[in-house]
Length: 183
Image (cartoon, rainbow, N blue to C red; front, side, top):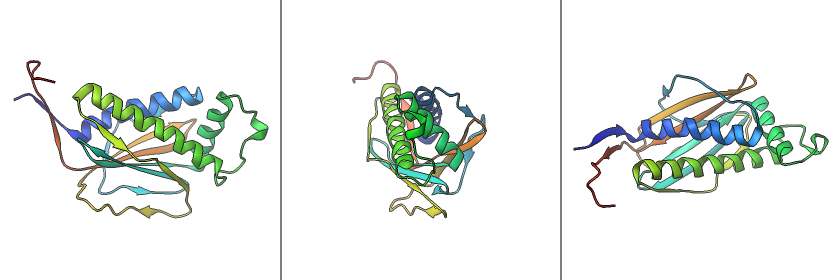
């Protein structure tokens, strides 16, 4: 039998790298990640910006990302300005449709990176739907029509503004076989 790792913990480690890489590349700002991963009872979308994206395939789950208004605006503004848009043409409020749309696009890139890194590391693939990002004024609990008992939360900050990556997954283990298996 090969090396065993909980699927959610493997994806959490990969997600930490993907979130930092994508947001730092898009904003040119440093992203700070907490050294602690939290095991949480459920995932939920919380104010000010919440985004969700389910994934299915060789492993199944749901990602939720939550952003304070300040974090969302920093990510949005620096992303847009890195693409050449002048600051005076950017949205001024996190509730503007452009802010969740931009956050959703970056989360799409994060999910692409997570699925690629997972496929490279474990030879397993999953497919994501388009992320749905919303400006929120109250929390939304997502009821998933499956039994995702494993939940993790990663905490991040950009210029002291907080945001979170939450992962819900089916209970599964990745058991890496020796090098002599057929691919």
